Structure formats: structure tokens, C-alpha cells
Length: 104
Image (tube, rainbow, N blue to C red):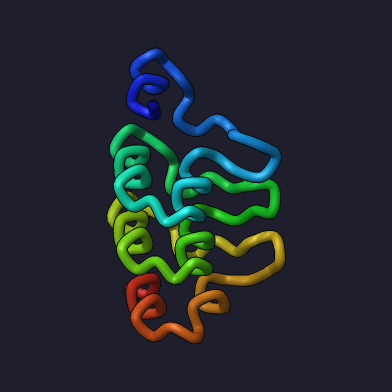
């Protein structure tokens, strides 16, 4: 479905609701393959939802190491502070592996 929409000219960074983009939704649901497909098709790894959370904030919150790695590989900025004044370090402080991935 995503392939068909993008082939038909859909905006990969369009909001899919009041809080997110398709990338945010894919990450929240843990869909690594869809996340990588969206990133490979120009989804912004730094787009913010209404709470100023980036896809990387969501991936860290969901503790999905594979998606964190994919986002960092595609240029996600780990220095962005969310709308709650929390850094990724704040989100990841309980997970040493995630903390290492975002501070490399």
C-alpha cells in the first residue's frame, strides 16, 4: 500500500493524523521494514509531531534498537529536544545500548 501511494505521488512526510507522519506511526508500531522503506524514499528522520518528538524520540521510547540504528544511519539528529524539554539521553538513560547508539 505504501509503495502504491508513494508511486502515485503521495507526500512521504504528510501528516497521517494530528500527531504524526507515516514514519512516526511505523516506528511506534515497530515496523522496521516500513520504517526503512520510508527513509529510503525521502522520509525526514527529523520531522516533528505536534509534541515536537522526532521519529528518533519514538524509537528510543519504544526501545527499538534496530530502528534507532536505521534512523541514525539516515541522518536523524540526536541533539533535538522534544516538546517536554527532554533529550534523547533522558529517554534512553535506562538503556545503555540505546544511549551508546545516539551519542556516537
